[in-house]
Length: 372
Ligand SMILES: Cc1cc2nc3c(=O)[nH]c(=O)nc-3n(C[C@H](O)[C@H](O)[C@H](O)COP(=O)(O)OP(=O)(O)OC[C@H]3O[C@@H](n4cnc5c(N)ncnc54)[C@H](O)[C@@H]3O)c2cc1C
Image (cartoon, rainbow, N blue to C red; front, side, top):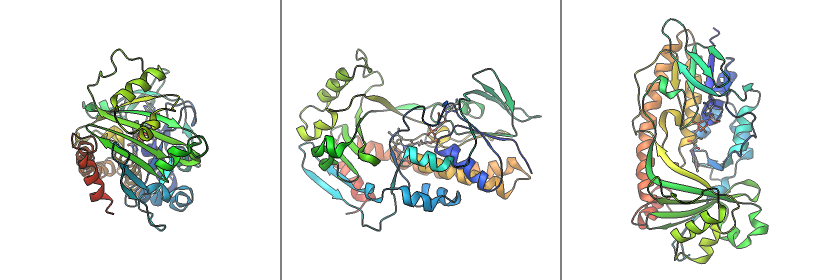
């Protein structure tokens, strides 16, 4: 049975869906807004959990390749207080494979493999139709009909309005990201501070963290509670002005910790938005959502994992009952909603504890999820 299936978005959700469908012999059109795979920086590193992202890769037949590429040592997690004293220094056992790290670019290339992505195809709207399949509108004015359109187009999904009026809401927490290159040679003190994986420092309503990517690249994240317009009067493109403003926000913290903010040559503003913890919708014939488009939640190591498992499970559901596409999608949606709601509650509670008036909450959370 040959259905016309389109997945909007070539992120972890869309590519996993496409790759597992491809494995089952189903063609799928991946419609991606970016003009090319490397047209923008791919972002930081992702830890893929055994029962989530790794399970999805297993369903795609890619687990062995992931194990070769991933960094188990990247699971290491060090926590300091604002005076720079090490409070906790968790290192994985050499055989520990529960949550190894992989660079987003490596994961994307692994998933892309033989897929034929239509790059530079920005979708502006999807119109569900009862008699015919949904109609996809593109930014260049073109239109195309499919039997199933899957919105895997992330937080600000253009497919979502076809099934749900809900939009993401600001959590009250903002992240500002910067990067360091060649950390071992250029910033050896910071390399020692960060260790093999991540370092995090928790203060009152704010945190400063750094995470190793491959090749000596490091992402640094400053997170803090602030109104959405906290940067009023600050030019976010002015690197030195943003640096000064962040250093003022973390005033009084130990110099070796603040040094994480001293070398970045660009700062990216990432206010944290979420969808409601239980975002469900009345099933719409021929259209569904997965990944962040369906269940955007705080970035606490679950989003990409869930996105990938969504993709793998929707593909498996379609392959198991291709004669009734709608039934396959409904079955998938029920499964996704239950899992996503559970994780949305976990990550929302986690964000409250990690960017908290009481920094001891963050330490207690790590003791719970990663016992010493
Ligand atoms: C700082 C940070 C750190 C994180 N760390 C982790 C982590 O360690 N582990 C983890 O599991 N999760 C993590 N997450 C969450 C994770 O990044 C997301 O949950 C995940 O990327 C969602 O995947 P997705 O495929 O649903 O959406 P996305 O990754 O957002 O991909 C959407 C794709 O759709 C494309 N697109 C968008 N609009 C259109 C359009 N109109 N037409 C066509 N294409 C379009 C985009 O270009 C993009 O390629 C983190 C998030 C952040 C912000």
